[in-house]
Length: 408
Image (cartoon, rainbow, N blue to C red; front, side, top):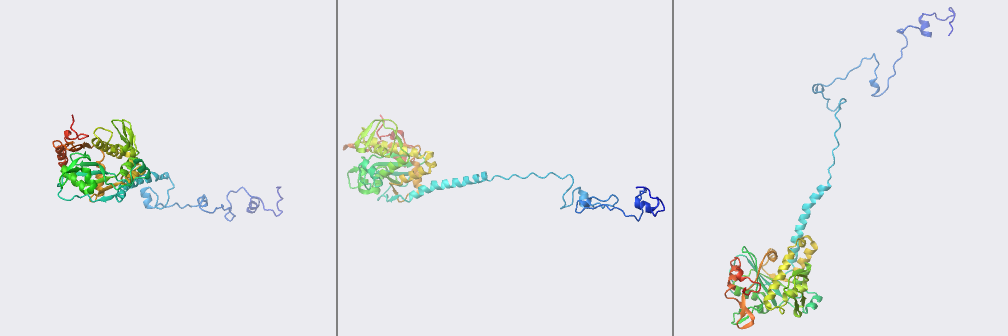
């Protein structure tokens, strides 16, 4: 701007008016000059930008924080803060649930294994098997009398047609076995149906006639009188029990020592070990017209079939497969009668005694002097076997043979 001539009303240089109007070289504004006030923001961030000549108020630390070097309670630390903790991994609950199910499953299995036999126990027929008159006293161990009857009322029409047998109530028997269990081991002794026994009215008769005329009580009385063995429990098995139980197992193994063709027993099999169904197993255990010793060979085959069923019962598959387990119990209870004093625990012990290692014998016998087609107990060897069972002792080998005849 061009200098204006002085005296024209323009303030002279160096005067406060000139400097105020045009600006001057003086750095210090007059005390009454308007000053620029720094702009202040709003909010927490703006409070941190203080003017350089403004007195600042420092925060006072609490005594607890100064003494410990930490921060006051409730106030987060702003310096050298520790890293945040890692988030804790959530535990998977699925394995824990699976482990918790194991005891429950085991409990259900045990309930099933115990419940199925108990249920079928309620379906069994009971029979009064207590004989009249004097009886042998109590003896160590437990003695079961197993009777195979011709009871066929549980057979299907197809099975009756194959066996050519009507529906009968079980009045005849061709299987009489004493099963002993105790500390001396287990012994299964067959008594041939053709064995002659004395009767109270005098004379003799075949032992199976007692079952036909007097049922279970009279048969128990004849067995006890013949052997001196106290019978604790009675178990009667019908045709259907044998057939259906074998079929429920899927068959059993038998080992005939010769070809066997017996039309009366509906049997036609070859020599050697083989798997057979229930009908064949029943025919095999009933046949008596093929081998030389007739009924003596038959009782040995009956024990063979019973032992084969026992071996199948011990298979783990019997207990692992619930359907198989049900079918076996259902089949076994279909044609079975027990004495009135037997309870479920006694029946369980009986079933266990039918399995495992058991000595099998036929009562030591000789041809009857009065009839070569009948037999009698051997007066020299039979008492040794009877006494071993009575005393719950080891059975002498000389008295225990498959057919009851002395070893040559």
